[in-house]
Amino acid sequence: MTTPETPTQTRRRSGEPAPDLVAFLLFHSGLRREFARLADALDRCDPRDERRRAVTDEHLALLLRVLHHHHTEEDEAIWPLLRGLVPEAAPVLDRLEADHQEMDAVIGRLSAGGRPAREVTTDLRALDRLLNTHLDLEESEVVPLIREHVSAAWWEASAKKVIKSHGRDLPMLAAWLLDTATPADRDHILTTAPAVMRILYRLSWRRAYERRMSQVYG
Image (cartoon, rainbow, N blue to C red; front, side):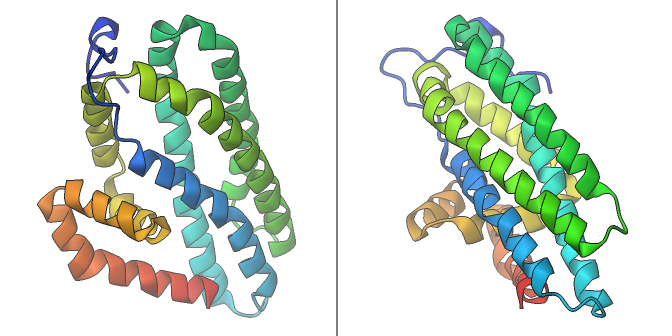
């Protein structure tokens, strides 16, 4: 992804508001809970229930796509920006990129169809451990740097491009994100989202998501 501004235009100036990281951190919260939860659901799934396994695999495929998308956005846009703004952050950014590569290997296995449930749950729990350790480091070391150094204008422009790039996954992803949110964060997201997204969420996206959650988790 091409960053929306040149590096000299991306630095937060003194007195300017910090970037709005509510959706970014909600995405982390959702990822933290979902893969272990899916592993538990697969453990409970009757091997003869092909329909439930199929919808569980469909939900997993969505989560793997959005996780990979999130990592790609960080590697191609956010981390390079921070390397320019905060050169001393390079070691932790190198570690986070290495984590992405390690997780990509597990994502690749999980993306393969037709695997026994036991193998899938083993990889889901491995991904859950890797991801939570990764997010602990990212949130403790890098999120403060984003708040301090990145301009709100750059972050907002980048977020708009990311939203559009999710394409067909956006309805389910948006409803999943809001399901993760506290009431205050949900109100914030709905207040700041485009009007058309708020309308679609209330008319159809939420119901489609709730139907899928019922099918996956019972």
